[in-house]
Structure formats: C-alpha cells, structure tokens
Length: 310
Ligand code: ASP
Picture 1 (tube, protein in one colour):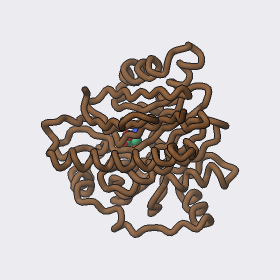
Picture 2: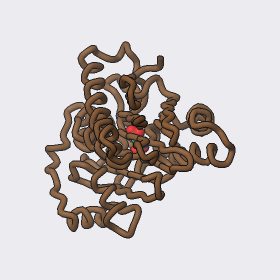
Picture 3: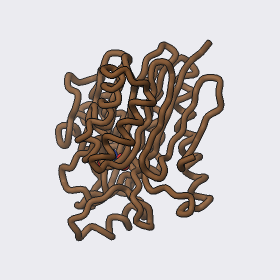
Picture 4: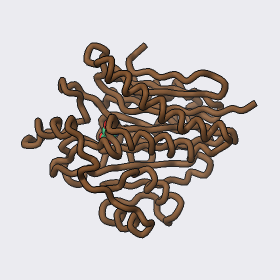
C-alpha cells in the first residue's frame, strides 16, 4: 500500500477568527490547498520528498498572501531580502540561501546550492553570483510589491523597530512558508522560505535558512520547518532540538515538538510554531500563537486545512 505524508505551513501568529473576513479566510485556505496538492501529486506518483517539499514551497512563494517570494516583506531600505533552505533527510544533504534579491523562487536556488555547489549556505552577493551562474533571471522590484506589506513598512520605517509580518490591526503574524514530507520510499525532507521581518536591518538573517534552527531533516528522526520570531528560534536551535529530543531522549515526534514549542522556545520569549513528520508518516503541527496557517495530507485520507486553534 502506498504510504506518504505531507504537511505545509504559511506562518503563525495572532490569527484570530474575529480579525479575519470570510474572503480572506477562503483565499488562504485555497492557497494552502493548491500548494498541498502540488506536493501530494508528486508523492502520489512515487516522487521524492525533496521534490514534494520544493514544489509546495515554490507554489506558496508565488502567492502574495505569504511572506516569501512574491509576498516578501519590506526591509528597512525598502527592498526585499529573502532566505530559504532545503534539507534531505536521507543523506543530510542541505542547501540554503540568504539575503537574496529579485529571485522569484528562493527555494529553487537553495536546492541548486544543495545539488550543484560544494557549499551548504550562500548569502548576499555570493548567492546572487551563484544564481547568475545557474542562469537565474531576476525579477524587477515591482514583482514583489504588495500594498499591504508596503503599508506595514510605512508604519514603522522611521523607527528602530523591526517586526514580524503583521496583520493590519498590528497583531503579530509570521508569514514564512514551509513544507515537510515523507515519500513512498520512506525518506523525509524539509523546506522553508521567507522574506524575514518588516523593517529588518541590512544583513539581518532569521532562522529560516539556518540548518538546524528553522529547517532540518534526518531520516533517523524527523523533518521540521519552523515559523516565528527568528531570533528566538535561532537561539533555541528549534528544528534540531526536536530531532535531538527524539534521538537522545527517545521522545515521540509529537512529544518532542510539543516540548520545544510549548516549553523551551517559549521560555526564552519565542513565539511561533513548526510542522514536522517522521519516517513512520506521523505529523505534528504545534504552535504557541493563536493560529498557524497549516495543512496536511496522507495517502488514502482527505486533506486537512486549518488556521486557528481547534
Ligand atoms: N522566522 C522568520 C524570520 O524570523 C519569520 C517568520 O516565520 O515569518 O525570518
């Protein structure tokens, strides 16, 4: 019998039903559903977990609804600097890019770093030079323009504040996207992509592209993609911490993820959540915020899409 699993997220935060219009809720659910279907189709046809997570993330990068790719937030300089990472749990191969500009699908570039360079993590000009050598075209800044993100930046651009992608009513909301999957061969993978934080200073890098912080995959334990206040997720080495609790303490996927999100990262001030799968195909999606855009699918069962706490 075919067995596969995929889970995706589109960010966590103060996502309360009373702040949401029916149209907005429908738009987010549709976007999640389409991205999930892209990944599911690959797994259903026997494709790899790496292909599935890359496809789901690429799809969300093309949507203005999420803070990644097209919907990336504005930096303090009014630009868009994006970060992404991908990891293959089969051989611990990984690729990541940071501080990149103009690239339509940062996850593709992260994957190219993994597969076509001798390095794991390329940033800034070096990453852009690598992109150029791989034949990437860059999009004009207008491609990444979004009125809501622009208004968010205008509100704080003259201050020292930097903040997570937030909703119009100033509640904190993180719009990073991510996917984790287990394929029919029993391999797992994780991918994460983000525009980071509104008004972030030049050179700021969050947890998303850091292997072990915002993204991690290891066939012996789990595949994890995080969203939340990156500074805290870096300090908590969140994604690897979930894996370590499973490997060294024998915790289940759910116990380990719960411990990290509800206790460890929360204790140091980190808010957000994660999605994770293990090689048995279990899924967990804990968050310590009001909500998290999330969805999952398993072989032979209907997909589930959720935003708020149940
Ligand atoms: N974790 C991301 C960052 O700090 C933000 C997010 O999850 O939206 O860059």
